[in-house]
Length: 194
Image (cartoon, rainbow, N blue to C red):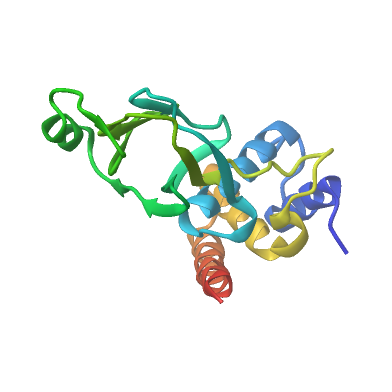
C-alpha cells in the first residue's frame, strides 16, 4: 500500500520528535525534493529514463526537452543505421570543427542546459533518438511517485538525513540514518542493474 503524503510527513515528524512548527510542510517538501534529486543523481533507475525521437534539422544545435537533467546518449539514424554519437567537451568540438563543416554528426557536447552541439553540423535532416535522465516527479499531496510507492524507506531515510542535518540533531541519529540511506541507495542501484 502506498503511503500518503500527509502520513509521510507525520512519519518524519514522529521520527524526529519535532512538530509542524519546526518542520513545516514547506520545509519537509523541500527535504523530499532534495532527496529525490540526490537519488536521481546517484541511481540511474528505470522510472527516470526517457527516450525521445526527432530530427536534427541542419543546425549545429539541438534543443533538449525541458525535463532533461542529464543526456545519457544520442543516436543518429541514417539509412536505417543507428550510430551513437561520442560525447565530447565544447572545446573539443571547436577544435574538431573550426570551420563549421557539415556532414553526418559524429560528436556532441552539452552547449548549455537547453542545447546540444553537433560536430560536424548536420548536412541534412537526420532522425535522432535522445536518451536522457528526466527530472524525477515530486512526491507531494497530489502526486505519488515511483519512490513513494516502491522505495518508501529509501525516501524516508534520505529525508531524515536532511532533517537531522537541519535540526543539528544528535550525531548518532544523523549517522544512523545516513548509513541506512547509503545502504539503501546501494541496494536500489544493484536492483536497477538487474
